[in-house]
Length: 140
Image 1 (spheres, one colour):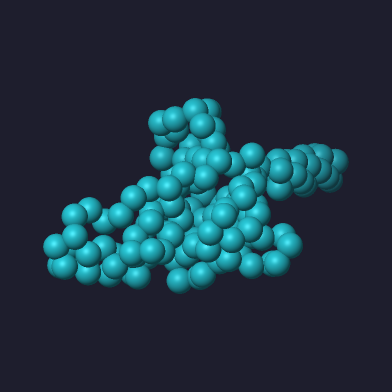
Image 2 (cartoon, one colour):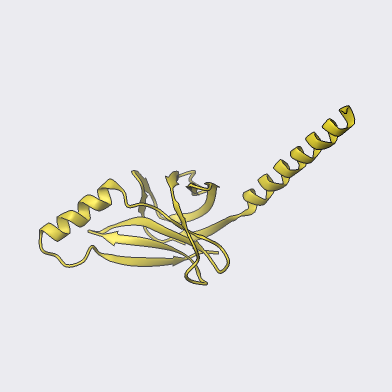
């Protein structure tokens, strides 16, 4: 009985360690040439590492400046083979909207922040067409 318990616990520990190591390596990097917002956090231009924290959250972090943010996400099936970040450009500000890690991976879609929604509403109210444009940044 003790032997079976030790064997089972060993397998559980090994699987946790292996899944942690696999998740630690599952990130992408991007050189973002402009400041941008993730939720309520304002991040400066720079090189960022983007990694899933779990199934419903993502961590965006600049390893050099330690600037970073945690954001809720919605997973979506891949609809493109290119790895990229998509930003919404609204009223002169950039908002991270989508993260695509390439073919075979699910995409991560961030919900629009309150500020982004307010800016889009202001643009529509002032009669300006559209809510801005999408800007793509390649990841590696």
